[in-house]
Amino acid sequence: MEEWQRFKSVKEQGEWAELQFMAAAAGRRFTVCKPWGDTAAFDVGIEHAPNFLRVQVKSCTHRRGRGYWCQFRPHDGKNEDYSLEQVDLFAAYVIPANAWYLIPAARLLGRERKRGAMLFPVVLPVRKNSFHYEGYKDAWWLLMKTRRGLAKYGR
Image (cartoon, rainbow, N blue to C red; front, side):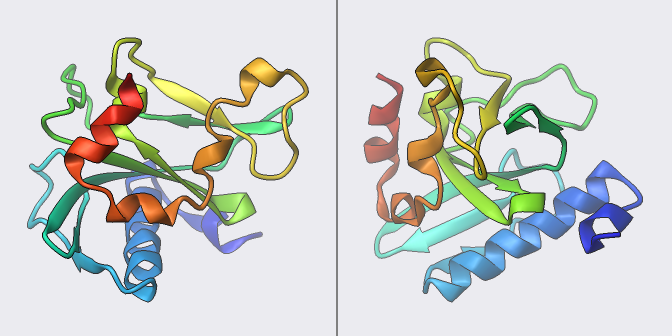
């Protein structure tokens, strides 16, 4: 049994994924900030030069065909959804593949709201129209963007 398969709850898995993201970002020399408590819509703040980005960390483990389905909705049982005023970037961790996707929030929360996405870190999809987010795999350079720069990805 893999280490990640031993989590007792989705919340425990999410907390672990947040720690993994913070370690990965800090290892790339970004300043990492953690908001106190669970009331903020974002999990981690990233400071780079004069910029501060709000990052919501998500994780997934269940494979569907060639890919993994990752949800981009709050798991707290509320009907409220994320907004572009609350989150700048989603960091999606495909745990079994040890793969990170850094996706601008504007790409998911823009005109066509996406509740989730198929990610293909191991085997690329057969159909080209399924290849929406592969350009965001290991896109750590997006943490150097400004909020305005990330907002352009929603157009």
